Length: 362
Image (cartoon, rainbow, N blue to C red; front, side, top):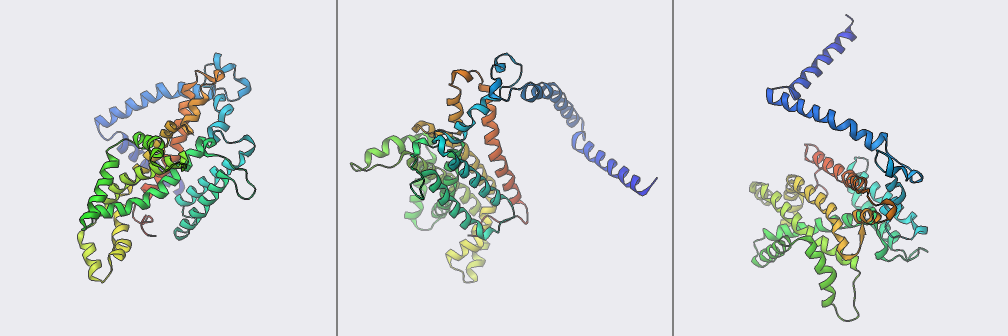
């Protein structure tokens, strides 16, 4: 036997042992593995045939959707502009398309190690300014587009991005305030956090869109999308503050005492010693809140704004595409998954030793 063949045989034997240990290490494990394989054998082939083999992809073949045995993805192909951009003017679609590309690029740069961490903040600030200019218009020769016409996946990403970007910095002083030795600061922080966490987001959005304008002076109005965004920021900040507080409580008291013994001020202790450790501990809770917040953007429908999920629902009201709710909601699920899963994977990378500490650049 040649050395190469022997190495390949040893590698195969090692892989077989690992597979056996993972799937057939005991009788219950073997039974569970066999049951899963059987269910997969029963479910996957018909699902693949329905979703891909017999599916209708082109809107020009839409009549086949009523008679065929496959999925009707032609619905998505026909309505994708509305799903992506909402009611944005058709001749200006390049603007929200550029916004989507820019946001995805910024998220990709944040998740990868290509861009230096100390430059990310400046890139995000510049990128968000460009996003606002592109969407709103009124500058550099761009026509003005009212927020009522924003919608689709673009709006969902905007609400989630601005919400997280503003809620997270607000959550840190709230968490520190709840642990403050000053009674007034502590009780104000507690009152805010418990009040916000004690009501559902839909109630907060309703108050921001319906009740808040009643308290404004005559002739003063605030854009309804801005009101919804602020409501979501304040709501998310309360939940994030509790996640940060949990991380702060996990940091041993000796860390703060040692930093104080070195002569560091309170701000320096928090910035360089306590918060970097606390935020790393709180990563699972923080990311869970971020993912939930991203999906909760669908609740803005109560103020008459069409987000990603709502544009899909509205598209189903077209008589030509009624009855294809399965394909529509599967597409919506895939869309949310494609944005939430990378965030989950990124958080797992941060948790591992050697990952970039989320508070390293505070």
